[in-house]
Amino acid sequence: MSLPSIAAVKSFLLALQDRICEQLAQADGGASFNEDRWTREEGGGGRSRVLTHGAVFEQAGVNFSHVSGSKLPPSATAHRPELVGRSFQAMGVSLVIHPLNPYIPTSHANVRFFIAEKPGEEPVWWFGGGFDLTPFYGFEEDAIHWHRTAHQLCAPFGDEIYPKYKQWCDDYFFIKHRNEARGIGGLFFDDLNTPDFDTCFTFTQAVGEGFLDAYLPIVEKRRALPWSDHQRQFQLYRRGRYVEFNLVWDRGTLFGLQTGGRTESILMSMPPLVRWEYNYQPDANSHEAALYRDFLPVRDWLQEEK
Image (cartoon, rainbow, N blue to C red):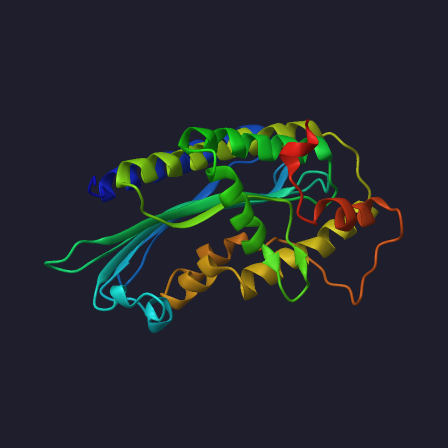
């Protein structure tokens, strides 16, 4: 088994952040990313980059972080006793994009690496990550493209990879207290540490590099569609689901806050504007109702193109 290379992972993640920011700014055409470098007293730091008030993206955040510590909090070791007494490093790139046009979906992606070490013992390490899509107004061709791209990047690693990580994504991004999915899913994986470091790292790279191949064609196709305040109000309402999931269920958000991470960077995922409405019900047979009926229930989108 090949040994983990922290330096190689960090180098990839920094380059990935650069590449994603460059291409998102180019796609927006009206704004650029502002960078905020920060350090963490307990160890490590990062660079947070946020684009706001763009021509296409109302807000887009792309964060790199590399944090370390002498021990993990009890919440992180409760189900992983092998981590007790180990120092740790956690690094990753995480991004959330909130477009202005309601016909362009919100999207999230991240790739991350964790390693815990103790003198005289083998390190405990794993990769995690994925990407998912949250449309407000669904288009079947966009959903098919999104999942086809995910399937294609998984294919070199085995026929079982895409269905396994699609299912994991469907299960993970489910808002239990609403009994509904956050969006149409994509890929999600965690605790990836077999068969060896090189294979796991290569797959994680494929996911990180494949995100823009999945997302930017959808942006280009929908960016010029006209929209009204009616669509905007539905977008703001549905953004509330995004906030609810991230604050109640998202493990990355909770881990970051519990380990003393930088709150501004962790909560970069929050949309700049959002609203809630008591007991909202879409009009029957409306475009808004179609989201709940045709897109949020789990589907095999690869079957749709056959």
